[in-house]
Length: 512
Image (cartoon, rainbow, N blue to C red; front, side, top):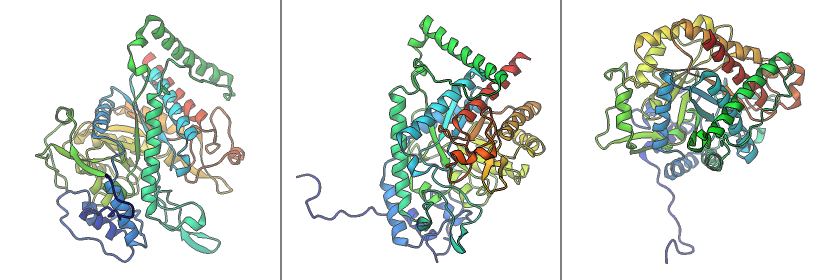
C-alpha cells in the first residue's frame, strides 16, 4: 500500500529558521530581530527597519502559512529568469524595448479566463505596434500573477466614525469592511491564484493566442478625430501588410516568433515574508555563467553593503514567485529591509524613482543592489509627473552615466499624474500620461541616453477610470464603469492609443 493509511495524521510542514524570524517580526508585540547584518540571506531583511509593514495577530497562523509557502513548488524557473535578464540586457543596450503593464492591484476575482485573456491580447497588440514603430524587439512583462499587494499612505482609515484597516490588496485583506483584518491565510491563497493565472497564461500562449497568423482585431471606431483615426489606420495597414508579405514569401513558416511570444510576470516586492518563502537556493541554468560574465562592466565594488560572493556549488538565490520584481518609491530606503532583500536575488529588479530621490542616493542604491554593475540587472522606473520630469530626470540620467551603471530606463507616466475630481474620485488624464512619456523620450535624447520602456497600469476591459484619449472620456463618464479598488487604469482603447503615439514618435524620429 502506498501513501498514508486512512486516519493516519500527516505532519504539517516545518518552518525554516529564516521563516521563524519572519514570523516573529510579523506578529504584534514582537521585537525586531538582531542578527548578522553583514551577511545576506533571504531573511537578513529582518535585521533592517521596514516600511509598509503589516502586523498579524495570530503567530501560529503566520507560521502555518509561511511553512506551506516554503514547501510549495516554484511558480517560475531560473532558466526563465536568466532568459529575461538576457532580454533586459538588450534593452539596456538599446537593442530592444520593454513594455510592462497590468492592473494597479490584482484582485483574486481577476483570476478568470476573460480578464486574463484580454490583458494578454492587449499587451500583444501594443507590442506589435511598438515593434513596428521602434523597429526592434519588444520584451513583454505583465503586472500579473502576483500583483496582489499595494502600499498605502496609512495602514488605517476611518469608516463611519470607526477606525478600520485600509485595504492593502487581496494578499493581505479584503475590500469589504468585515474582511479588513490582515489574514495570513491569504498569503497562501495569493500563491494559488498566481499559479492558476500563470497556468492559464502558459496554456494560452502554447495554444496560439499570440499566433500572428490569426487575424487581429484593430477596431478603431472609438476614435472621434478623423485625422487621428486616419493616422492609426495607416499604422494598422502597414503592420497588416508586413505580416501578409511574410506569409506570402514563406518567411512566417520558419519564424517561431510569429506563433508564440515570451510573456514574463512581475509584481512589487512588498510583503517580504511572502517573497522570502518563495526564494530558493537552486542550481544556476547552464547559460548563467557565460551570461553573467559578459554582463559585468567593472570589478565588484561595495557601497555600504557586503558584496555577495559567487557560490562554490554553482547555485544562487532565485525568487520563484515572479520573473521580475520591483521596489516601490515608499520602500526603497538604502538601509531598509526591502533593499536588503532584493540585493541578494538573481532576478532582474526594478526601483521606482520619484521626485524625492536625490541623484547621489540613486547611485548608492545601484551600488548596493548591483555592485558588479551587471548590464540591465536593474530597471529604473521613473515616476515624476508631467510637471516635474524636466526638472528631475536630467540630473538622474547624468548621475547614473557617471557611475558606470548601465540600466534600463523605464517611464511610469501613471503614478505622478493622479488627481481627484471635485467629488473625490481618483483619475488620470490621458494627455498627462502622454506628456510624461513624450518628455522622457525627449530628455533622454538630449542627455545622450534613450528611453528603454514604459510601465503602465492598464486593463483589457472597457473601464472608465482615466479621462481623455480619442474616446473623449470626461470626468462625467467615470461612473459608467469605474471598477478599480486602487488606482485608475488605462482601458484597452487608451492603452493601444498610447502605443500608437509612442510608435509614431519613433517613426518620426527616424524620418528626421
